[in-house]
Image (cartoon, rainbow, N blue to C red; front, top):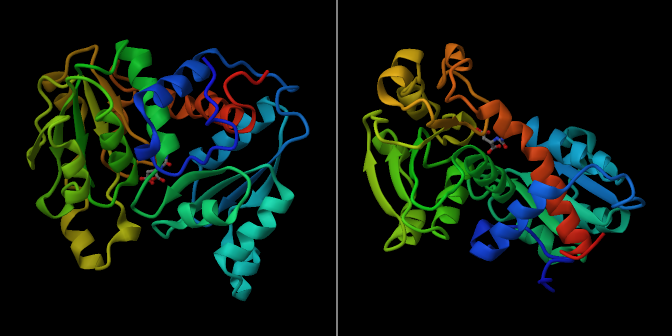
Length: 307
Ligand code: NCD
């Protein structure tokens, strides 16, 4: 069934996604194939005001594979913002140059502001510590790829649950599924924000703890301590290196068919020797950024029935 809301839709927060919306994206990502005619003549503006490797490259790759052009920047110093231009004015320009805008910015709410200003669809590629909805869609795609389902899973979120936008979006998305249980593992000062916990209430069974206990989990989602978001660097120094997943921990605590994910980049929270273990799926996860972002671009530009 076609969904009239897709063409022109903004992707700002995963809160705006019903289960049906999530299923639509995952299904589209499953079947979409490179096709240089699909988005031929379209242009994506890629506005990265914060550093990015995977998100930026996989959006660009998704465009190339569907025949769309890419304009944009990844270095704020090279833009007129360095001369004092406002974000709203930059967006007013981008909407005249492009059919879809992808934005990453350190301000929470920046993508919403861009969507309010722009007449073309805006996709949030990360706004400060707030949301990262496209990462969540590829996380869910990867979980289903390896475990065949999302309902009923026991999922551990490990690390910086306070500033990590990927875990905020993922936790919210999991409320759309049945019988999920969450183990929230973090240092006491990096706990999941109350606002997200309130969303979990009554929908996802969760427990918070400091100890790195992974037994019984189907998915372990590890995150980097978000150094750049700490108001006080001394606070960061106290928690850096709080968790390091090593091969003995994986072998002793996890089943072979459990899955370890990480949005990347990692610093030291997963030892490189874990990479060769059967549970390590974070590089495959990063690869899934391409089909999932191809699906999103197709949906917001052409809708479900677009060919
Ligand atoms: C994440 C981000 O930017 O929030 N990276 C990503 O998009 N894959 C996680 C991080 O930076 O730690």
